[in-house]
Image 1 (tube, one colour):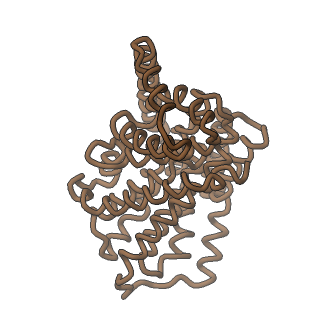
Image 2: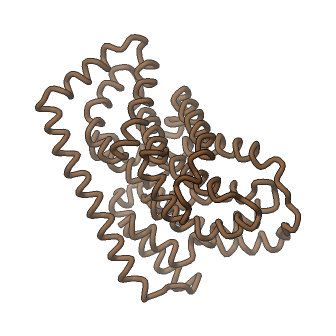
Length: 361
């Protein structure tokens, strides 16, 4: 249902309303549209749990204008991939839902704890954008008037309210993490029909097909990962891994550092959901024994997996971003290095300061 919701926000104009408001607000500053991409991915991720759907909703609305301003294709796909990794903790993330299901951690707590880590990592990406675009020429760039900004904000209010509605419904107990997706779909359909007057009926069937195929792929992944988890348990690997992690010197800090490295590698090779199904039930109890809050640990490993998922040459998410952007993967290999470093720095900051994840619980 969240995959379908992600497709709906692009089709109904909800994502475009968000992007237009942010572009009017920030488009006139150096690197402004890159800041808009970071902010738009944050907001859209608060609606859909699917990163592919998020990127498909935002990229087509921003990339043409960014190209006109001289942005290189490789830098575009690199930043899009980085924002995909940055927003992995934003509820209703499919990875967070999987963590809650596999480890027993409260999904409502995960949804509450996931907002601020995304902001922290977004700030590190924005700092790199500032550095890279500090000499950008703004010749010919028109600054939006206060009236245009206010008007685009009014138009975007129904779109900006949707992430708030989704989070509030889960945290307040109105609906479960699964049920709230249906609320979001009804909201998106009504917004498309009544507010934005954009609802392409001929796209409904292809969207349902896309939703079914992606959902089926996720279920196959979880099924295969569950079988592999059983095999690893029977072989004794699980026990050996748990014992090795328990025996690490240095307490919780060493355990956290090793977990970051391990999940970056696992995120690159396995992707987030199967990695959590395989190792979540093993490592979360050890984290608790080491005095690490389970929500804090969940945020750190989710960000680490995001880095692996969107880092070339193995990360599947990177190639999804290239396909959505219609940019050859080779073009983004060099520019993405800086963004991956920024993501890693942000992840280390989140790991070092538990309050970022648990302060609002």
